[in-house]
Length: 223
Length: 340
Image 1 (cartoon, each protein chain N blue to C red):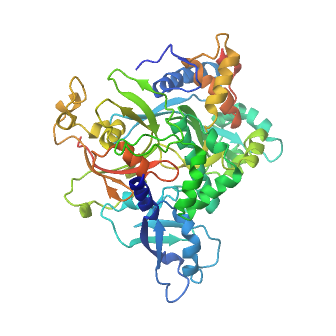
Image 2 (image 1 turned 90 degrees about the horizontal axis):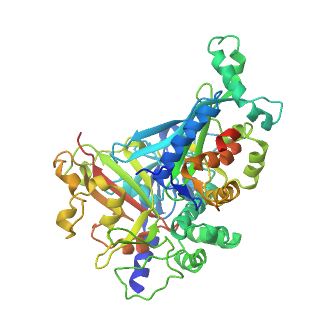
Image 3 (image 1 turned 30 degrees about the vertical axis):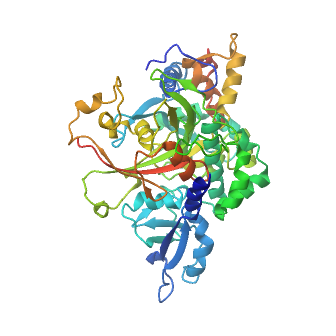
């Protein structure tokens, strides 16, 4: 089904709409986030469910350097620069040895929720030796606003849950309420009521959700 | 109503006899402790049994901090799946007592979500309840607006298997009901009808509700005659998990059955519609013509709450009577994998 040209007006999105929005988002990200790796559209073919493809957006191996001094906020702004450092470090492994030790790697997946009819963000962190990071360690890499929200709502904001397709524990941002704030966003951003072209859905969504994990959406993407 | 209540009572009283062995690497006493025998409620969760099991083994454990987990024939068990569902899924041929191994050390956090005891289990329940409410009512306000004490009491009723308390408290969530097509004459007890948004599609079917379903599909590559010949499961990767609502469709003069529900989630496994229903003008059987008998997959068994289900049962009856207390219907399906 082709959902291009559709509009979203109730904050929810269909699976077909999600797939259109995901590609549009990945394209825009590539154009406006040159310093970052790009999102890829992954489709797994399940051997039991045959034709049913399981698709999600994936951004992997993002490096965040955990520094002991400095606020978490500053760290999140440094993500881009850190990533470049890593690229260069491939050629100068010896020189940046100590940097490697402290590097935290993050994978982010955007998965469609058939229950809530909205996208969901899953992520995981691991150190350079591949060991998964616990939430306590991850907290140090999150913006301070997310950390305080985590303290208030331990069980309803970010929890460890099974990745719907990978069968492994990942962290999940709870999607309850997404529909409401997407509705608010689309009301404020457009003149004709609360309609939003489906191509802009994930961009708007990520401009809010990305901030929770310290990933910023360039303003140009929202236009 | 009486018949309904009876089925629900059976579900709540359902239990699985467990014989629990302490993993031999954790036996620090001589002789090793005998296995513990425990009756585990079907609608319960394994970590909730710890206060019953711990006394059996506490004197045999090596020093250290406890983090309890279970395995069945080496497969770590996911604590967030209700115990009855684990049993239905992992024991094709029911094993009684069910022999599980308990571990107090070495939590396999690469494959299992960490469990901080009862709190984790409770919030897993509440978050599932919220998700179910969203599917059924289109929002989770009724769960969010529940008072802390009501939420706590509801959870306690589930934990204690107290159906009376649950029946008293659960109407406060105001979950819409689907009308039972099996016993339509029964008094309408629903506080409100489901608001899935009534839509009429081209085939004249009316979408009356969305039903929260968790479907666990275990595929076996070799064909088998008897359930006892089903091979043991080595990894969770052999299970496909589908957390997708079923659109409940109502069509004049036709009953929406369990088969219809499963077909909507696993269309490639149900292809013999032409023989079982007299619909005309449908294109449902087109797939079957280009797939030969040998290559297609096959549903070998559908099990809900320990019952091997006949697919002709009205889906409304199945949902209203066999769902778990978080309003999710957990369905275990065993399929023979299609040959390629």
